[in-house]
Amino acid sequence: MDHCNLLLFHETSGHAALMHACRTQPDQLISVYKSLLQKCTPGGQPPGSYNLLLTSDHMILVPRRIEKIGSVAINALGFAGTILVNSKAGLEYIQEQGPIEILEAAGCPWQKSA
Image (cartoon, rainbow, N blue to C red; front, top):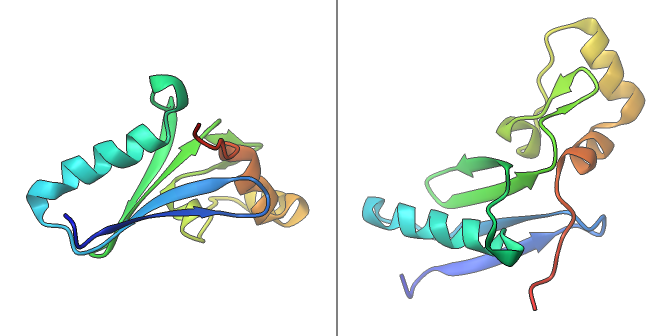
């Protein structure tokens, strides 16, 4: 895995996701997953809830504080840029609160490792 780079992304809001960028072989995926999970676990306790996004080039693990904000459930697609709702009330809630604010409320604050 020396050809792969572990990248750290965080927004000015103080929320973050971890990404592993490379073309990983299938037998390496579990190792990459465990590495990302460890980086998201200050003090050794894994996050109680998180979203995992996979593409052929990236693996992103986003810890969450809560799974639902108001009437809107936040899943991995939300952190990929698509918040899905099943009612007009859900859409109105997103428009009132703002999608970024909803994701910030669901995500975990960034904690720098020592």
